[in-house]
Length: 260
Ligand code: DGL
Image (cartoon, rainbow, N blue to C red; front, top):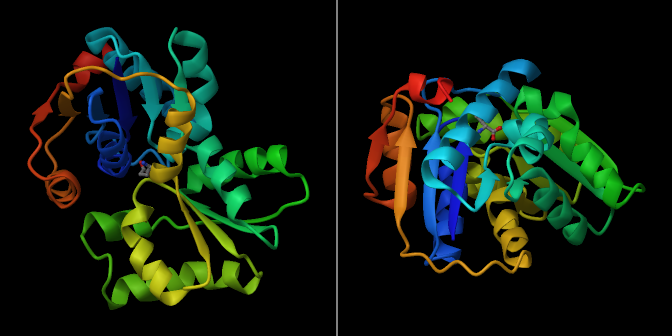
């Protein structure tokens, strides 16, 4: 059994890392669309089109048995479409993140941070309210977190100031739980924790592992790991080394995606 994972770029490696550690026997194929990142400031139509291209590439080339949409933005807009067009389980990060937040919160005040597109889609709010309509939800797009993380500025003064600038308003609303609704944000987790130690932090890369476990699929492949990107990227190389060491990365042509 094999797992396909795609993201707009590097951030989904946070998901790849957790999935690879928890399912060592699964063959895992990762596609990072580094040529077209970011998705988070694009229109719904574009996000859905890019997502279909990434998903069908993994499905047609590697016959993956399960597809994980690691990207929160793609999960927010393309999950239903991909579920319809692919004959395999397709899992997005939004539902698992929402479920984890509902388990953590005591005062029922939950903060959600993500890209502009994810917040605009209200995907987390809808899932959270489906689970518990009495929740109070406060959302905030944090677009500067993505370039900060890509620059490797995850625990310096600029990172701390940016975190405070974005999050203080949610903290002032009294949230006790914060969903990191973007693949890059788990890299800022320690900085967020150091500034706001009493907040429960939901990392969707961890939440998704519990979700896959609940499917009770037996992954008994050879533990193959293959990573594909659509363009060269220093940020990707740095991120990959930081998260998963020296796994090989292959560049594919964007036209290989688009022709499917
Ligand atoms: N992967 C995206 C997400 O999780 C963040 C980067 C982007 O904007 O493409 O929403």
